[in-house]
Amino acid sequence: MDKSHNYSLTVKWTGNRGTGTSDYRSYDRNHVIQSELKADIDGSSDLAFRGDKTRYNPEDLLVASLSSCHMLAYLHLCAVGGVVVTDYVDHASGNMVETSDGGGHFTEVTLKPVVTVKDSSMIDRANELHHKAGDLCFIASSVNFPVNHRPTAIAEGN
View 1 (tube, rainbow, N blue to C red):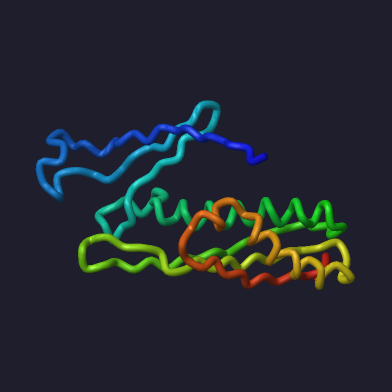
View 2: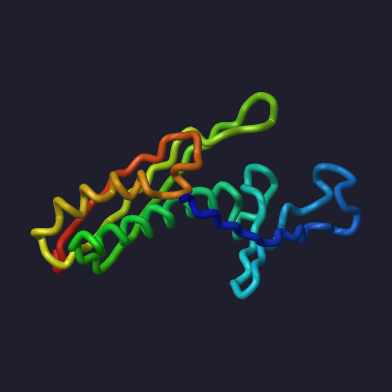
């Protein structure tokens, strides 16, 4: 039987400079993402869309969601598969294109995790598990563009 999980949060716009959206340049795109018992996330739009470059934008958060979901699925598979991971860093990137109607869409996201394992005998298995983690990632299973994986596994001390 499939289990259902629900997620709730609040997105509050904080960019009213006093005249609301009276014109395209009259307001900030700043907002805050809130959820009970969790730290707030300061958001905005991408700088290209008049946003604040010091805040996360929705595109950043989509790439981060894919990276984080993959990492969590991967660490689970390693833990149950006998691969001891001691460090994990992903330098993820995504590509989005704007369309002539003012919209846009992602064409791909590439995850580039560097995984440190306890022993060099675990490297091959560590690299193999990324494929299965990609299949298990809830977020990757929900998007309509490719999520590529370019993992590197190294042994501790290297």
